[in-house]
Amino acid sequence: MDAKIGQFFESVGSFFSGGDQIPWADADVIAGCEREVKEATDTGTQERVTECLMRLSWALVHSHQTEDVQRGIAMLEASLGKTTAAPFDDREKIYLLAVGYYRSGDYSKSRQLVDRCIEMQADWRQALALKKTIEDKIKKDGVIGIGITASAVGAVGLIAGGIVAALARKK
Image 1 (cartoon, one colour):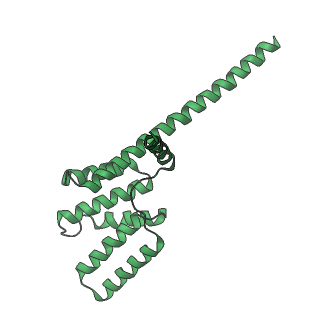
Image 2 (cartoon, helix red, strand yellow):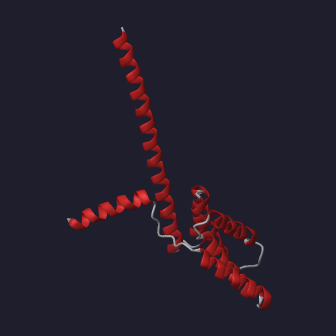
Image 3 (cartoon, helix red, strand yellow):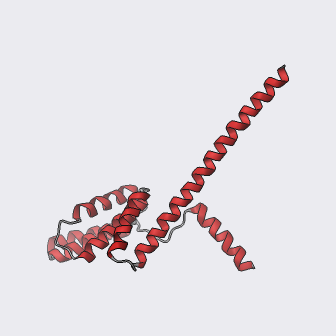
């Protein structure tokens, strides 16, 4: 019984905190990836540069900073379809784009992209988990929106009732 109560409070807490299971990257990780890209560009092969750019894109779309997320999205969109990459690489880029759009709050675009990933590989657990996270976020935002609307309607009704009561007393 205690476990069920604990699970209930944990689910309520995660509902209001918006906790998802997508990892975050901090400024140090991004800086390290940027150094790798510079070093690979100066001394490495094109394959090494591409690997480092993918790591940097991953770090950017997983950042707490909106500017970093937008930069990661721009990098990924620019690289999609340009190279003769394997379908696996495009799938990874589309997945990272979905993460980026999720982080930036564009849930419908994120869901479209993650659906493309699932079309490419139906049993891809990361994509399936991201899709569930997106759908949960959309439901949560809908419930909060309904709550705000109901509160506003209730407040308007309360004010209107107060005005009617005040007018009735004057007569």
